[in-house]
Image (tube, rainbow, N blue to C red):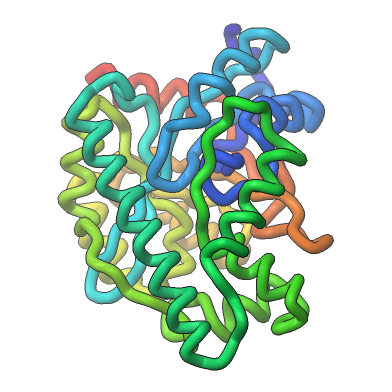
Length: 291
């Protein structure tokens, strides 16, 4: 489907293939209902939901941009990189994504162990049940899923340990919080090379969350093609600042909601389409890929 001038696109969403609430098909349907001309599927460290989403997009008439959000670490800072238009049939790329996925699984186990050591009654079986229940409620039968910190937060809410997603992250799950676990991850500059070798385009996700602009600039100089200027957790001042970064370094200015869905009645990041960019950004990503 060709994009129409004036269409808006959301270049950052998550599905049940990682820590989102809705199946890939449902996210695409929601994007269409929100009036978007295109939506990117960018699950954490997996492209398992992309094929399903692309097929649904073709069926209902909305462009689906294939993507993935890679988890990296630099100077003890969790840094996320968005990769678009990678060759997902490439065996080396598949192996590298599997490596990242295995790291996520190990982190879940360590977080649960840390919570248990604090006297909180929580098990991996309960956590898996949360993810499976979400899959049954929202996903097609063949959808794959992985577990992330939002699932742990949801379980803590259900047990009455915390009252909200924000409280769960602030008290237990965010960097520096009581149950946070740092695991060995790939460095952003190495991950950029992975993305390039897979034929993709690399964008620095939500730079405002890192509170370290010197590091952001190091990653830009390391070969990023774009920067996520517009994000649900960015202030207007941050959007203006990173737009200037993009112009200074000649980067593609992207944006997206970071949609995960509603958990316990609370939106995690933003509603689908709440942050968007013009259709021309997709054209810029495609042009960069074809260079």
